[in-house]
View 1: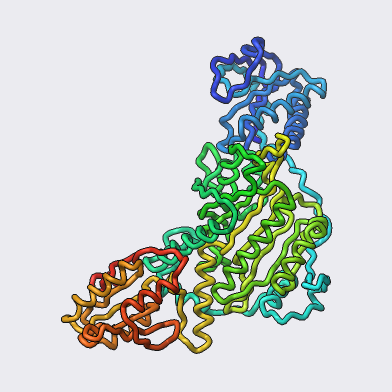
View 2: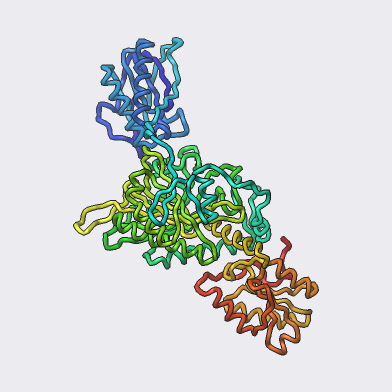
Amino acid sequence: MKALYIHADSMKFEAKEKTKVAEDIPDELHKKEMKEVLVAFITVESGDEDAAEDVASEAAKDILSTKEQVKAERIMLYPYAHLSNDLGSPKISIEILNMIENLITEAKAEVVRAPFGWYKSFEISCKGHPLSELSRDITGKSAKPAVTGKDTYFILTEGGNEVSVKEYRSSSDCMKYMIDKEALGIDAPAVKEPDYLRLCKKFGIQWESMSDAGHMSLGPHGAMMFDLISDYATDVVNHSGIGVYNVKGTNMFSLDEPAVKEHAELFGDRLYTVDTGKKKFILRYAACHQQFAMIRNWNISYKNLPFGAFEVADAYRMEQSGETMLCFRTRRLNMPDFHVVCRDIPEAKKNFSKLDGKIFDEIENIGREYDMLVNFSSKQAYEENKDLILELCRKHGRDALIHIYPEGINYYWTVNIEYHMLDQMKRPREIGTVQIDVGNAERFGIKYSDENGDKKYPVILHCAVVGSIERWMYTLLDTAVALEKTGVPGYLPTWITPEQVRLMAINDDCIDVTMEIADKIRKAGIRVSVDDTGATVGKKVRLSKQDWCSYAAVIGEKEVESGSLKVYVRSENKDIDMTVEELVDRIKKETEGKPVRPMYMPANLSTRCMF
């Protein structure tokens, strides 16, 4: 709060015209004059909303103390929006001004408060002594929850036993490193140049030097991979067995909204903020704000539940610049954010288990595996959800690392699972996640009508089946690196390879027929490029391998006459004889059920720019 005190011989004002935020006032408050008065011009700021009662209390004490110091006979509180650019909301401003007025009245001092939100004229006669003009910057101390105890870590085995992290022996390397990092604070040795960065460079994935730290740019290949993963994440959610509403929203939300402000405070200094000079906004941390803002206006019956809301949402997190990591830890990320609205805890647990299964299915589909870090907001939350987690441990045949937060913090969630994959740097990386949210329905005013017509707050699940788009891209690149370390060429799944087929004309005479074959393959929905450059055949073949094409074939007179191609299959690292039809059928089977997009660059290599 900003304040300016003037000790005046007299002060009079007249309320002339209402603004759109003006409060209603009685007739006698349209005009007022006071003599021998301490006038307190007050600007309530946005930060005062966190501790309104404390701010009002401190302000009232300071005004009363100053009144005695300058020997003023009475006090006028005058709302004045020109002492700060960081204005509090009208609602909170009026509440704080009223609290100050009431506290001064309780102290038996004469006080008048000028109306808020009116265009007013005023005349003031300042006394002119050394203490007649004073400025103040008043802050209150927000009452923080009393945190007691420390973070608790232990292992919950699939047999139901609780084992100390120091005594636990695991056959899973991921679990070992996860315990070191999360519970014991021990990081794996530093790696100078992670292998996956070479693949990032190959596919045009890099930091954008003209932006803030932690912001990526994607060339044609990287952009295609990104969009295909986005399509894939959307398909996974829409085939989850839960009815889904796909939405699109904005990324900027006003801190004047109490629900937004309260939710934002949970993320502290990791939030991006935008200050327009009149208002402060946050850039969304995930899709929660937008989806909740929409759902609160829906007419929801118990018959509609459960249902999901989904968006691939651009989200912003102020990660430490030294901790950003290409594809994995970025300041701008894209989250396939899935929220499932459930009528109660039993229904939430049932769908929690269903989403857990989807998350495990997706990582196993690419030949990787997860270990679970299960976070609980309190010891009570652990006791209430232990059976649920034990059921998942037994289903997956895995133990879980349990983390219980210290008591005393009123979290909006109760249980959260982070699904960690061990990467090639021997670091556990969180990819998928799911959590039970018991607080945001009430915070945002989301309600449904139960069987009796009564309004109830639902329970909301938060889920990212494949993590962020960037993290799933990281997972695929890390998997390719893992394959390379087995002595075979690394490869990507055919559905996401930027160039699924590369055809190479053996000489200029074969370019036209090569183009005809390429057209036939392209019409089947397959991405195919043609090397029609003047390079030697050997160089063309080497380039197709360097470009990580899933399939590559040289087209010459022999192939035209026989109708059979000698196709290099990257995933098998060998040549296989097959017809064009057999090649198409093979790729269609490999990519069945996966999203399809056309090439993101010219198909003919002779027309491409150099990167």
